[in-house]
Length: 412
Image (tube, rainbow, N blue to C red; front, side, top):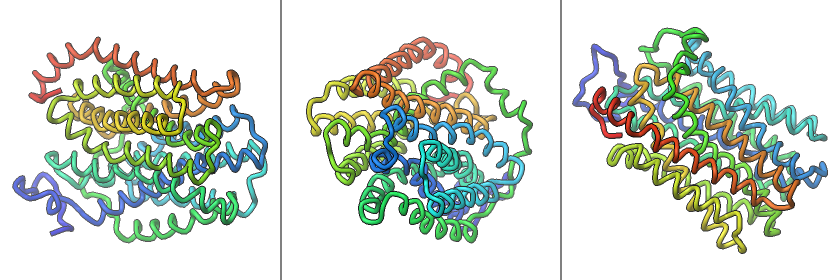
C-alpha cells in the first residue's frame, strides 16, 4: 500500500520502494521543496528590472541576489533544530507561511529601496532553508535501502529554480516586477494546502538534539572537508542560478525574458543530473566522481570568464552546471558513508555550507563587475576554489578509502 510505513518491527526488506514508505508525504515534500526553491531565487530573474527601478550598482545587484542564499544557509541549521523538536510537517508549514506573509507584505507595501530588497532576501531565506525540512520529512518514512531514492526524489525540488527563471521575467514584463511578488503567493498557497493535507510525520522520529549535540560532527575534520566540497558544488549551482540573469543582461545585452530562458536551460541541466550524480558515485565511487566534477567545473568556469559570445558562454555554463549538479549528488553519496549516525545533522550542516558558497559566488560576481568592469575575476576565483577543492580531495582520498571502505564495505 502507498500509505504503508516502515519501522523496525513491521518493515519487510523485500518490499518495493513505493510500498515501503508514505507516498503522499514524498509528493508533498517534493512540491513544498520545488515551490520553495522557486521563490528562493526569485530576486535573480527580477534583478535586472529591480536594478533599473532602484538604480542599483553592480555590487548592490550581486549582494541583493546573494542575501537569500546566505539567509537560507543560516536558517537551515535553525530549521534542523526545529524539525527535531516539533517535526518536519509543522516546521514546513511555519516556514511556508512566513514566506507567503513576507511576499504579500512586499507586494502590498512595495519594495522601494536597496535595504528593502535585502529585508525581502532574508525572508526568502526561509524558502531556501526548506532543504532541512523536506528531506527529513520524506526520508524518515523509508528504510535504509531506499533512502537514496527517497532523498533523491524529494531533493529534485531544486528544479523549482527553473520555474523562477522561466516565468518571472515574462510576468514582470506584463505586470511589473513588484506584482510578481504577489503572484508567487498563489502557487505557494495552493501547495501549502496540499502539503497540510498530504504530509504526515513519520512515527519513528529520532530524539531531539541539543545545539551542542547538533554541532558535534564539526569536531571531525571530515565534516569540514565535505562541507567545503559542497560549498563549491551546490554553492556554484545556486550562485549561478541567482546570478545568470544579471550576467546575460549586463554582458550581452539580452532582454530579461531571453536571459531567463538561458538561465533556465543552465539550471535545468544542473537539477536533472543530481540523482544521476548519486547513482554514478554509487557505481564508481564518490571520490572519483568528485575528482571529475572539480576538473570539469574549474575548466568550464575559467572558460566562461573569457567567453566572447552568448552561445559559447551558454554552452560552458551548461557544462559547468552539469558538473556541479553531479557533484551535489556525489557529496551526498559520501556523507552517509562517514556520518551514518548523524545524517540528519550533517544534511543541515553540509547544506548550510552550500548556501554560503552560493552567497560568495553571487556577491563576488557583482563586486568584480563593479571594481573591474567585468565578471571575469569572479568566475576565475571560483574556478580556483574548485581547484583547491580538488587538491583537498586528493589529500584525503587515501585515508578515506582505507578507513571508510574498511568500516562500511562500500565504494567511495
